[in-house]
Image (cartoon, rainbow, N blue to C red; front, side, top):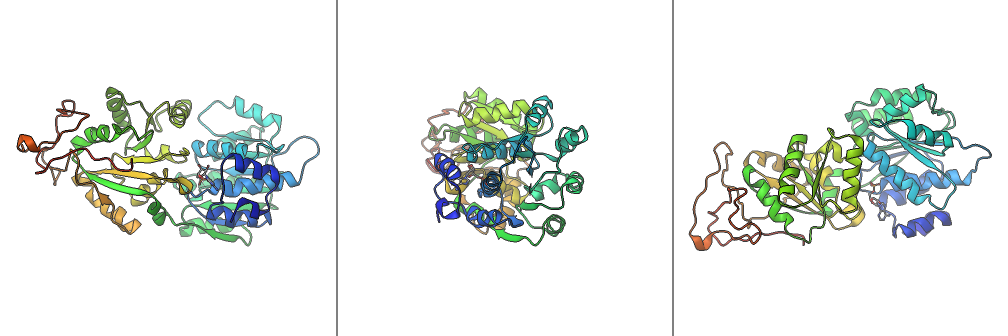
Length: 425
Ligand code: AMP
């Protein structure tokens, strides 16, 4: 299957060619013909499957095929839970629609509304919005939804998780009854299906790779390591210059800031992205990471939703997530649309139960890197890490951190000659 077989118009095919998209992903090859045929759609697909193009491409084609006389009206609304996702969707519409005379804008909270209102006043065809700011601008009279022909609810499950259900319902009440609706969710729990039923009419259904199996495309490794040695291990891994960029996950905002500080001390460029940062600081950090000015982006889970970096090859779980699905979402930042992906996870003794949950969810054992400079010493994690002394000839020799002074907890009793092992290079 090629994009040429999907009855797409030439200007869109040209932009896909420029984006170097050759074959449609499964969600695209299934959804695009249905949307072009005017059907409502219930799609079970998570970020990383190419779902954004699966709705934005046919929306652009449908709007293009019905040109408007006079001033532009908002004819399509995409509702998405986070600013990062909104920005990413806006970039997709711009990229795929660059040879069409259609315009779109993105609105989200946490920033001044002036620029958004100015863009709306110019007249747009497609609006991409987070619910709160959209309701705000509607109440101020800056947005009207009466001309919406195609409505997309993106990441419906995340929308519910983040408590946006009431805002979504308020918006549904304003939308024209006569419309085409597309509903995307990574999971289909009963409350999601219930919400879908209130939005869709006789929908066609599309399901692609369930969350638990996406992980199979990504090479995954786990390092058993004491908590106190995670910094040292991270620096060791990042000393492999083949790792051009890496997204590192921590469980807390404070943890993210601490890791950034530590990496900067080791002259590894790093920035944190989390909810305590102002929107423009987050966007700047993301842009620096995308342009590879910053090598390491340290993120918490919420902030990382919607981070879409082409060619991101490495994800490092500095801490194991305590919810197994989060692991799949985290590592799903890499290996996008069939690209290469590698995920390293650091697991201390207390985190072993989380690892067991993850392996159960993805139905496979994650390969253990057993030869590394900081093997797990404290298997109960209740006592301080012991420093057993091996004969000098058997002590680990990392070419990057001889002596390991900064960390002071290099493990030395592995009983064999050790060297730093990094995979995926
Ligand atoms: P999404 O699931 O919409 O977040 O898309 C995941 C990533 O895949 C994005 O970086 C897209 O640019 C990329 N992508 C989407 N469709 C294709 C395709 N057909 N071929 C190559 N890359 C794609």
